[in-house]
Amino acid sequence: MLEPHRREVLGLAAKGALAGVTAAVLGRPGSRAFAAAASRTHFRALVIGSGFGGSVTALRLGRAGVDTLVLERGREWPTLPARPLFGSSTRITDTMFWFRHLTRWPTMLPVPIRPGPGVVEVSQERHLDIACGAAVGGGSVVYTGVTVAPPRRYFERLYPPGLPYDELARTWYPAVRAMLGAAPMPRDVYDSAPFTHSRLWDRQLANARMRTRPVDSTFDWEVIRRELAHTIQPSATIGESDFGCGNGAKRDLTRTYLPAALATGRVQLRALHEVRSVGRRRDGTYSAVVRRLDEHGADLGTTEYTCDMLFLAAGTLNTNRLLVAAREEGRLPDLPDTVGTGFGDNGDQANLRSQPLEPIGPVQGAPCASTAFLPTGFGLPLRVENWVLSGSASLPATATFALTVDTDHRGTFRYDPASRRVVLADWTREKSAAAARATLAFSTRVIEANPGSLPVTVNNLYPFTGHPVGGCVIGRSTDLYGRVKGCKGLYVMDGSLLPGNVGGANPSLTIAAIAERAVAGIIAAGG
Image (cartoon, rainbow, N blue to C red; front, side, top):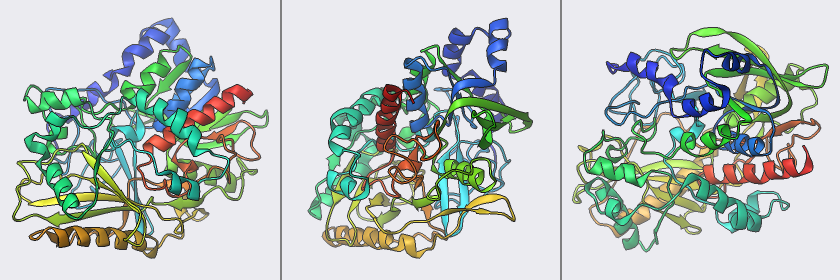
């Protein structure tokens, strides 16, 4: 059953934290200044998407004085400390999924929901479900906050030689961490009851002679402490993360890069603006045809925006959809043939272990406490992270999320003329198999070192990734600064740039760091 406060929540969605910054820049809604600004359709730069790449791009362009519009298909969500805002695996709402009739998520049973602009899109591609954020702030609203870089060895194996790891490690990774306020879980939070499962996970890996380390996270530890003190509605401490934390427990991009971008006075943000196509006009400018939505998902009509510089940051799935369609339909005929190639699932795998003899706590808190990188012994190198089972008080089990370093298995986005859709055409279950074997080998090693711990078989009918990367790979489809080859003024600034695999890490930090470096180079060169 849907939550009863749905309509009230949707009404509040337009009153999020960024609205005050927007009003300060453009004037109050209803004023002549606001009306004039809201009716503009040409900008020096358009940024499609407000996730990590888009938010970085908007801030740096704004600070450089570039007249910029950010187009975001999803809503801006408010912060509601007093009551639940988003749904979860144990509390289904129709704010969870982007225009779906049935829920679809690992371990979640299909439940009917009303289609609308929810916070996560799940695209059912052939042999792979791809999940991506659909909100102001993009994936930062729905990710688990882990902010970690890939090891140098695997980065250098995957990325082009001209993209120097030393420069990222010295300059751009630290800049992003500072901007996001990333920090490891404090000891008092780690020692609390909702993180009993985290302490058990660490202890069991130590018994298997695997060294874990605290991991930087963008969860707001002061808000987590307020949850623990029962002064605000619980969210993160009861395992909610996948569909957002409405009480402000995450320091998502609506609290960091985006308000800083709007505060420059050179950046506007328009939410509920879904870009349906992009192309180049006869006068040399770029265009984006946009479907405008209301907060319930109703179609309000179509607008065409134009620009001199077009930055694609719609996320791997939708950037590939837009560009491959534009090439095949003749709107961007000069796009390289490599656009759409080199996609990968980042080796994403989930694994459960039953713990019938060990206490796991009354609930499992969502923030990840620790991680271990395991370079040898499992077929593929892999990073394992302490994960969460939302609503798992009755299930004595711990969860691991694994990200394997897979240099071989890639897919291609292709245009289907019959449906006029872009699809992941050549993905097979075998392309996920090596990562699955590595994760199972890891779990077996831990079980052997911890008597009483047992494997749990999860009947996932479909492979799944929440970290789609590639398709417009840096150094192949673009230069080393995201400029699309052969298309002056066209740029890619999101996970599409990554070469099908981050290299043993979650994507967010590397996406943002590469975007920081790229935009700095573009601004310095004047384009």
